[in-house]
Length: 148
Length: 138
Image (tube, rainbow over all chains, first blue to last red; front, top):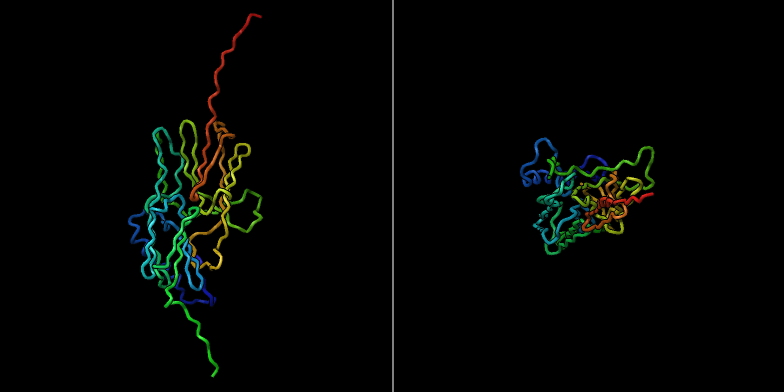
């Protein structure tokens, strides 16, 4: 996990909190998991930021985008969908099954509120990209310091 | 006819691919091992590989002797104008090799890629036609 700390030292890191919150939510929402196997969240999520926007990318190849739902409320983004496993027809034998399949559900808590009306999502080459924008009222404003 | 297959638990994180013994990679890019599903029927072997971020221009499939190598190149790691701030998966290329048995017809191998899933069709060699040899009195 990439924990950025601009100040170099031990500073309160909002991303670490977010990571912990995510794991909590994942545990609550994913239901049962095979005993003893450390289950990672599926699909994995990356977050990119700049001053105005946040870009969330998820690796989920082979999914029908029309069955994917992206919901935004306040500071939480929820992605749900389904990935069907390749059907093995009669007369065929399965040698290997490594690719994950089943329900897709990720709820990600963001470090700031975003404007649901300005959310854009696209699915290309198996990667879901969700672009979230801060509401106008909450954008950080620069304050100029006047000399006394 | 399906043999009992052990269902693997949900996938572990992406594994980095080791370069062949004694060699190193020239690029600094990470290379991962794509997850695959392999299905066989009487005529063909089907291989599905997860390579998110790869399109038809980034796929490279080679067969050398009896080794099939799949490679997938992805685009830029970080989208322009953004800074990576939380990372659960690494962005990198894909590579995996398989040994082919003699029953695969190498010249007939073909592939398609859609939504980051590479589908490889490996037809089996058609059985040789038995011929009758007529013997004439010499």
